[in-house]
Image (cartoon, rainbow, N blue to C red; front, top):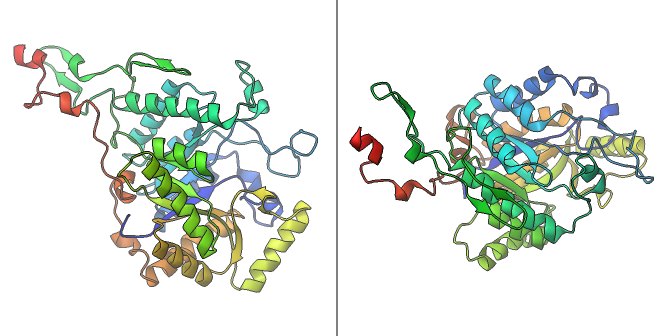
Length: 403
């Protein structure tokens, strides 16, 4: 587990509450502008957030009871991977973790897009892996019906994750030799085909993108039930769980991942982040009133089982620091916080929560934070290529020796 509390902000639209776009000062008018996302993420970076996840889906937005798009919520979105790549040059240390679905997306495109992000961010890319189960999403592609059961979706997703990993490893770190004397730009012996044939995916050949700074950007996966936990253990480096703040629930959610690791025969204890939706105000009463106003505007409470898949907490910074400390004591590496209102709550996380966590001894000061790649920042071991052990001891290929 990292020796410092990991803090990730989850960015989505005007915020995670469906009525957040109606709050004065919301970002609703700027959601399709790059400047909005750049300014938002640059502030998170400057003030010490470890990473941001960018939500994405093939669905334009939630649907109402009739199955049509719910016009009371934000509808429409920019592509998360493209936004992350566009914002990357303006940021310095923060990890950029777009959500990229594997259900209707070719593994080759997933792999090369994320490798490109890792290059342009100088080693700060991550990937939140996601499946797309709905018939509405499937209809956009027209290749197969939607509504696959979870077992089939996860089986396909495991294969895609394996292929993406193979493509990420397909170029050795030093495959580009730029040997002017012999006229060879690359050494073919240092490029390897993915060569995978599965029940859902068949891929032959290598990536077109040279190996990126991290080798394999860290994969994030949400594990809110047993089958999702098993999938996360098979595919991910960082696991997100939705425990709430009750001690029994928090222990149970963490145990779900540890039990899945044991069942898989894995010796690796992955960093587990508590995934929580938050509204932050100066007092508990003010926070409760703000959430109540949002719920009234939406016409229904935003809570577990009613729009949210995780605990919704309207609270103060001091209370949130205490709760994060409790989670940390239980064995959590940190938290991913979903701000109900953007920019109000995302700003509070960066400007108020970060220094409060430093004061509480749960994080280091921004000036002393690591500026290395995202894997290092998350406490994850470097990614060693599966082909590294096959290289000659000298590190030189047979073509180089004979040249």
